[in-house]
Image 1 (cartoon, rainbow, N blue to C red):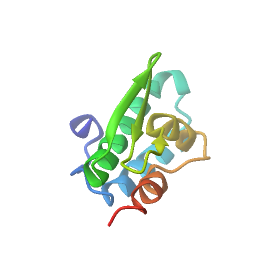
Image 2: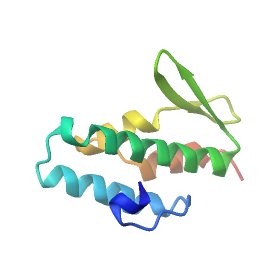
Image 3: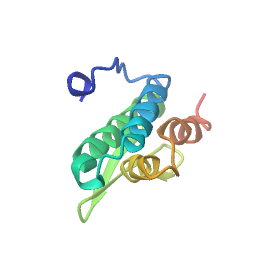
Image 4: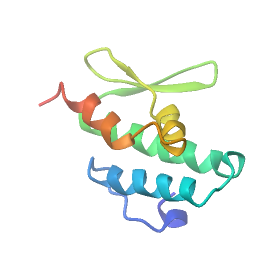
Length: 104
């Protein structure tokens, strides 16, 4: 994902600003959803891994869906959030902020 998008991704919360901006730009350019669905899934998975690393959470899956479970028991869906970001109604940066707000 890093090489294809040509962006610096270091698994930090700050890197999700770049991911959000990239998704917004893809959407603004009018790319059909079907053409970018795999990339969005990758961006969401990257954001989920950021949350896992920052919180000590873990990945959960069921029926083909994947979530991140943080130590407080909350479930987060970064892959769906990436889709929502593409449609103008989501933010991986804010998802990470919310998911990590209970950790010190």
